[in-house]
Length: 164
Image 1 (cartoon, rainbow, N blue to C red):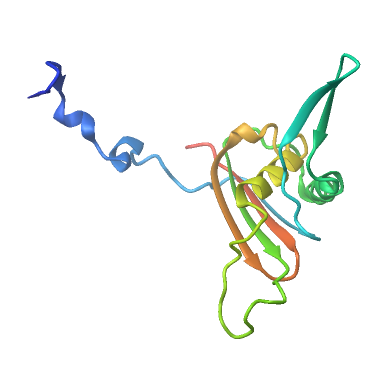
Image 2 (cartoon, rainbow, N blue to C red):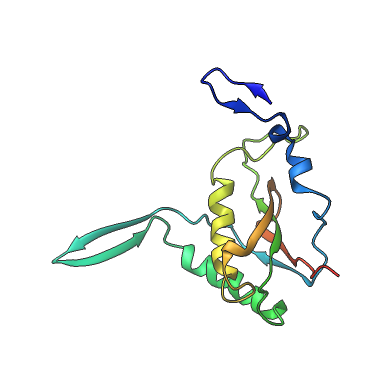
């Protein structure tokens, strides 16, 4: 033990790295895996606004086409679902957006403009909730990418296998 400045002792072993804390039980997901693709312009899950009209709450979304995008993702997820996954989930999402006309033709550019990647992920995760997964809080691993290409989204959902 080391003495601390404020009189409390510090335990040298308590400063273990995250790899040591995680342990050897961190295996890649090995359970059921489903993959699907949805064509169309990905729409981010924008902020919701609530206000009162004549004493009644009204909630609005900042995106008008969000409903149709979420429905397209849900319908495609239903075709591959085969039941709702209930365990820990890993999700990999690749969003493809149209390349701007002003972008250089021969140079590699990254999709650094709007929409935000986190809001795009939120729209997909909310769309597959109650269709493919029980709740989006099950997601323990998320890999997301945003690039230019034919508009759409590739989604892979993998359920962690039960340890033997």
